[in-house]
Each structure stands twice: as C-alpha cells, then as structure tokens.
Image (cartoon, rainbow, N blue to C red; front, side, top):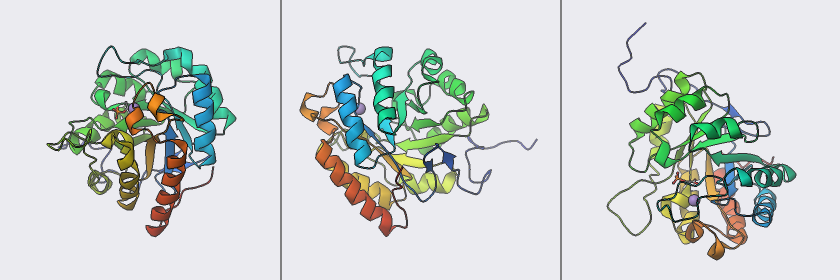
Length: 279
Ligand code: PEP
Ligand code: MN
C-alpha cells in the first residue's frame, strides 16, 4: 500500500474528487440544496421544544437541534435534561416532520441515543476525543463534527479521518468560530474555512453562526455570508423566549428573527445557485 504522507487521506479531494452527498431521508446535504438545522441550545421543557419544533418547521428548517447533554464551561450552569428530555425532543420533531440532531459527550450516549436520533453531533470541545470519534465511526449514522475552538482546518479534517477510517463515511463538518485576538464577539467565524475545506475535502461543510458570534444581532449577517461563501447549510439557535433561555439566550433568535433569517438566506442561496429545499 502506498504510504500516506498527510494527516488525512480518506477525507481528501485527492482520495475522492466528487463531493460527498449524504442522504438524510427527506433531504440530502452536499448538493445544491442547503441543509437548515435549527432549534434551541438545550431542550428545556415539553412546551418549549414543541413550540420551537412547530416554529422552525413552518419556517422551512429540516432538522431540529436540541442539546440533551450540555458541555458547559461552568459546572454550575444548566447541564441539560439528559435522557429525560429525549422523549419530548423526539416527539416534537416527529410531530413536525423534522429530523433530529443532538450532541453526544460520552461513549455511552451513542448506544443510548442511536435508535432515536438521526444525526449525532460532536461538539467543539470533543473534536479530538478520539475514542468517541472511533465509536461513531462504527455506526452508520451521519455525524456532524464541529471544529474545535482553537483547532486548525487540518486538525478538523484529521479528526474526521478517525470516523471515516472506521467505515462511516457520513461526516458533515461544521465551522463554529475560532479564538482570535478580537474580543468583541464570543468567537470569530472563519468564513474562509468554507472554501478552504471545499478545496481540501469532499465532505459537506456547514456553518453555525450562533456559537460563532454569541450575539443574536450578528447571527443573520454571518448566516448570509456563510451561504454566499458556499456553505452546504447552517445550524442556528432559536428560542421562543431568548431572554428566559437556560443556555445561550444571548445568541438565540426569537421566532420572528428566524423567519427573517430564512427569507434572507434563501435570497443569498438563489444568488449563488443554491436553494433551500422544502421537506
Ligand atoms: C452546540 O451546538 O450545542 C454547542 C455546544 O456548540 P459548540 O460545540 O460549537 O460550542
Ligand atoms: Mn448553545
């Protein structure tokens, strides 16, 4: 076998020239249609998640996000409902024809959530949790792999390689902002990562404007910029009452701002030859 002299191989354009298209059932990611993932930072209550599922579905989202296990900077912050939130999350999504995505923090979460969740999310803080990546590689579920907050693009693609090497080729990459010297926003969205990743890799890449900026008023322009730069989708935090959210309220859109985001990104999508497919 030819020796591999790069940090990643299966993830590279050299290995596969054509874009990877991941079939999620009602929609695909990696084609001209954009994938829209929206929902709260965390599942908080039956009422909250059902309201949101209805809101984001009516506005045209495809996937409901909602953290059950929250990786919080402070151990005193809300840690998520855990498995107790799973039924309400799943029911809210199914009742509104939405797919589901939630973050796994631990190897045990993979088995526990496998039959209930459509896409596994690996958060920034776990981008290089290699046992977790390998175990996800042994499933055949799509994995959304978020870029570490201080990770290079090469490190992101090498992390994806751990999943691919185990046989799971359904990896969606996610830019979510990195640490830089600017401190006006929570992180700095690396818009340039989108074309760079598209050049280096065949894997789809989406952008999370919410965690990238940490500020609701900056989410819309960054979502538009991501789509203009060629992102294959976006993931956005929405809350029925952002000021009362148990986590990340400051960056959560209220329903009307989310509707506006959908309208604006749709227009940018059309300008660059893409569209937001109806489910
Ligand atoms: C999230 O999307 O819920 C999240 C915690 O994001 P990140 O891992 O990018 O901080
Ligand atoms: Mn969040």
